[in-house]
Length: 208
Image (cartoon, rainbow, N blue to C red; front, top):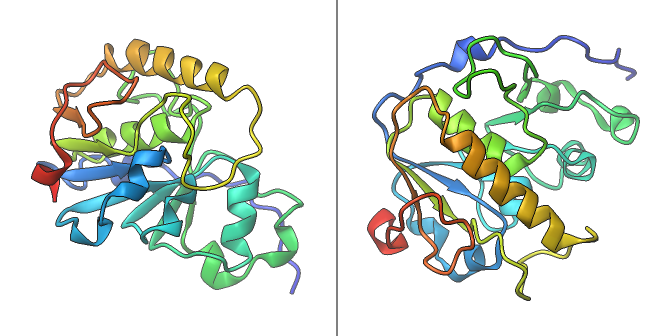
């Protein structure tokens, strides 16, 4: 079956404050993620990129075309997938109604986003996932696997070049954007060894 290209984006306002006051874990892709038994998570969680290799999340956020191709190829599944990318020729032929119906192609320029004068999509899935959690009203939010350092041991293979530069960019954006959140929320980083220091630390055991 051939599908028309998708050009319609959803209104993120549909998900505003959907989970007010509920705790949430946001799963990054740092090597520390693989050191935890994620099946013990008692709260809802938002997955990022290839965290699906460890657990299927309540929601999932991706930007990379390769991760979207894997989704449409049936390598992984989720209840709802958020992306600020539109469909691409790399997975156009793989689309099915079942897969399409779970994807929310989000607006890049929501007028009332939690970072004033900033669009929802920062360019990094990890930042977008945290801000989506804030937008949905989750509080507190626990970051699991948000290491953002350049040590060995990434839990899935990556072909990304200049990883240190990418991590530095993400850390800077996190610091800049989180300082401007228009919604009060408590965010904790559950990796004491993380290079991301703009959020206070809380033991991952407390989250479990």
